[in-house]
Image 1 (cartoon, rainbow over the protein chains, first blue to last red):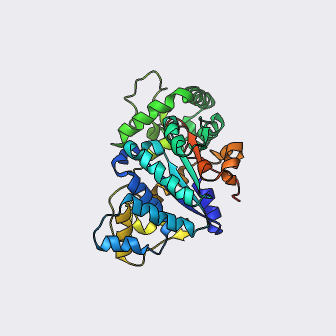
Image 2 (cartoon, rainbow over the protein chains, first blue to last red):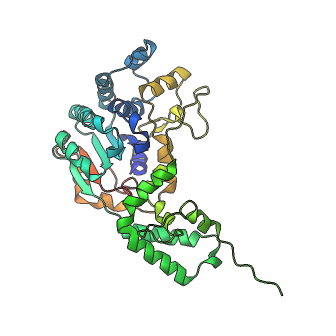
Image 3 (cartoon, helix red, strand yellow):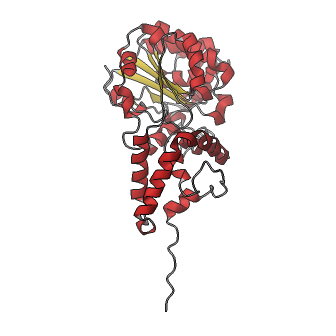
Length: 194
Length: 158
């Protein structure tokens, strides 16, 4: 998603800001930090004078300040895309505040597009602030997975350890288990992060 | 007579089984296979935490640390802030960074995974910009690991 947007951005007719939320860093992913991260990307080289001043005075900017600055930054850019991945992993109590902030920005610059991903349960919150948000349910695509497994098996640097029946067994089991394994694998992979 | 040694497992297979041998849940196939799909989608992010400690050296950050100087302006280019203070200010505005994470995803993503999205009617409507602010959001929902993070658009934006 981001790559394609960036290719287009290089041609100069749109600007992109993105953020990947991660459950492991939830406490940092507050509305103010997320809006700040978007502002950083869109403000560009010239740091807004308001921010510089606040920094010099050691005065923490309020969310409202950052929203105001973000609005000004967006207003002078070509079409803006804001992408937030795994919205459900940001600090839950800040989600309404974040969505409200994004709505404020978009209302001022209605051509701005916002791309969000997350678990289904945040849909309700999104619809509260963007009544006509377009929702697309994603399920794992067996074609993608099959191609990927074939690629990984082909890349095995000791092919003599592999034969057709093992290969077929691997493919069969992976595809069969795909539909129900993800949730548990995800939980497990988090455990291994520590 | 020489006794033939069995082949040691290939590095690939070793890497697959590493850390998973204790898995006995019936839902998983034997240890060898599991990590194949561990790497397929969003799960990767749990192995590459992005928000490490920030380190400034004349506004240039090295290694895998947070890189304030790697912040991007709408992807036009990579910004090196003109002074340490600028880099500090941006770190102060928000400690969150996107660049490193995106780089890892970009490298890991496989082939055309997720390309289908841009062909959908919902996507075209959203991208078309009709309906103003209320319709500004495209939300792709799914349970962990279905590949939301790796969605990719092949359409040209108008």
